[in-house]
Length: 370
Image 1: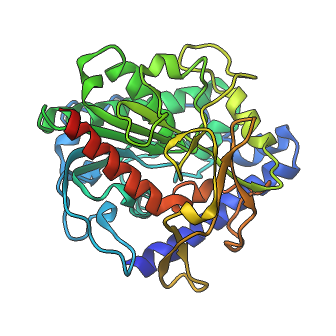
Image 2 (image 1 turned 90 degrees about the vertical axis):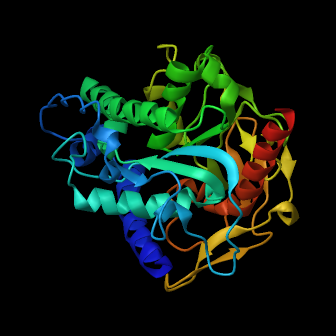
């Protein structure tokens, strides 16, 4: 299973790299021509209200199965004892199709990629008693690379599915059980909106252990107030948000800056120029600097992608004045680092063991206070 996972991740990352290298060197107009769908946007029919009653609507569903992707652990790592918490994880973009704006049910390629990314990115949370990860009609990559209204419509359509899945998740979990929300990249965008629409100012907020909003900037002025949670400022704090975007040094962040400015905040206003949250995943608190010797382990594939190992002390982490997470001199992880020393693909793997420990610590803290 691990060999298959790493092989397909390598193939997918090559595709992402080719895309973003084009964005790095080509003009905006050419980038849109190459990656943004040229077809008219077709409104997505709303999913049936019982769509997420069906097992096939989920990558991971509750207590899981022996082949559940999110329950995967790397070799040499023990499987954790179940903790009393329910996790809702939203996978990142795995659709790179220029012929449509949203994934369609039955798209086997996008679905298999989603399974594989869930396996790698949700695994720090697999000590949860329940772990849920929905399939959804995600927006294609090009939706995030354009100012066209079609891009926003595609993201909205994807979110409608995630919202329906989340409501099903809440309905199916014990109301006394705490919850964690987590997402990476496009998944993080949807988690931010879930917090605004379903938790902020509502009783559900009292059940939230933490929200891991990874690989997408959270504006301190235009996003965080709408989400109703504060940044995590202590390693055992609950009811708070963690967020970071990883770069090696020297870093070139102009593409991420442009994407950040392009999408409006949760308050509907432009985020351009506003400061954003940077959590240090090695300490679990907002801002600061941590040396490599406190990194409990990065998830690193071998040269042939036949396996993975957890390597201690691989990278340090510090939050830059601009808000990006710097991991020091760019570590050698092969050709899968994005232009500008952008470690987006590795936002979670670089800090895999620390995230696992952070998750367990916050769940224990929530239980203690209750």
